[in-house]
Amino acid sequence: MTAAMPIDTGASAPAALRPHAEEAFAHELKALAAADDRSRPARWNLSPWAVAMYLLGGVLPDGTVITPKYVGPRRIVEVAVTTLATDRALLLLGVPGTAKTWVSEHLAAAISGDSTLLVQGTAGTPEEAIRYGWNYAELLTHGPSRDALVPSPVMRAMAEGRIARVEELTRIPADVQDTLITILSEKTLPIAELGAETQAVRGFNLIATANDRDRGVNELSSALRRRFNTVVLPLPASAEDEVDIVTRRVEQLGRSLELPAAPEGTDEIRRVVTVFRELRSGVTADGRTKVKSPSGTLSTAEAISVVTNGLALAAHFGDGVLRAPDIAAGIQGAVVRDPAADRVVWQEYLETVVRERDGWKDFYRACREVSSS
Image 1 (cartoon, rainbow, N blue to C red):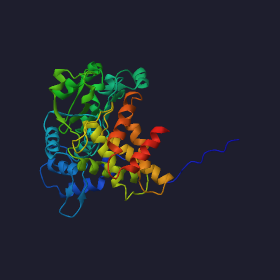
Image 2 (image 1 turned 180 degrees about the vertical axis):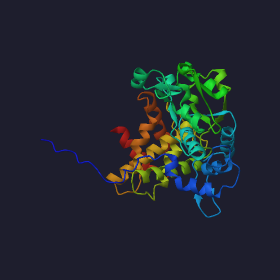
Image 3 (image 1 turned 90 degrees about the vertical axis):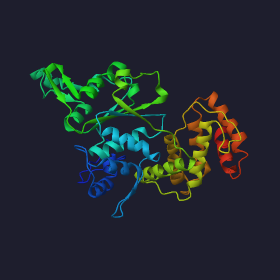
Image 4 (image 1 turned 90 degrees about the horizontal axis):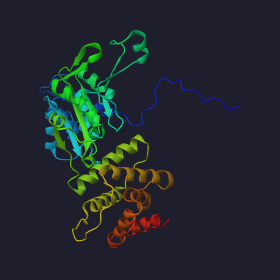
């Protein structure tokens, strides 16, 4: 007989693996709200200036350090925040891994204190995910009514004056996308079955994200595109910026996963970033050698994943110090997506660039060992 699994009856709930932004950075948001004496749009928790500071980082007069959530051009953040203070929705556009989802979540957290009013776009996203659905048990028993209606995250945001989020907008079928036209232009969501409507109250707006590599999947109609102000999030401008981003995110993920800190891991992070940037751009950092680019995007997000996985290997199967063998397998997996074409690109890069680079012999040997296994 199998023993029954014990039930945890403790008063404290288990810690979330990934807290929402408004929970993970609650102390920063509280400190910003206390120090923020600027005017705030209706139902905004912070002024536009404070929202921008929350994303870009800074130090408050009381000494509270606000950590950067986005490393990039300040003007991009300012335009995004200002857009949400108007009646136009915001479309964050960029290649994979440019922090579109991350920025979207933190904007909603700072403005509304709630980043969970989210629609995840896929090829199977139905119209009900944007408009509303029905509790069919209630519907069959009592017929159409407000009690039987199940509001979508967008409908809730309209009624409560909050920020709604739509991820991967261009992956949603075109006819479902266009459900947003009336919502964004008229600020109204008709409920035809009840002869009623939900009107957006002040404070409502919408942030959508889209991958510009998905052009041709489900292009936005011109009518819908006009309802958005589009902000393009670029790849990190410099290697130093990208190293900073990767280091910060790996530290945050490491803490949430209870991995030990890797004080000597900066050199390996810099190697990962260098490899990704060179293969992305098709030329080495010194501009002397052209290299072939693989089929994948090699985004900053993928670099974060490679380093985090390497940190876990170092913690559980090494001495806790991040070294070349810890990242070799992960970086090969990120580069070689197409086993036929990408393997040739990776091998050529190893032999023509990595092998000849001073101080990279250990990295070269580690990658060759993985490649030959």
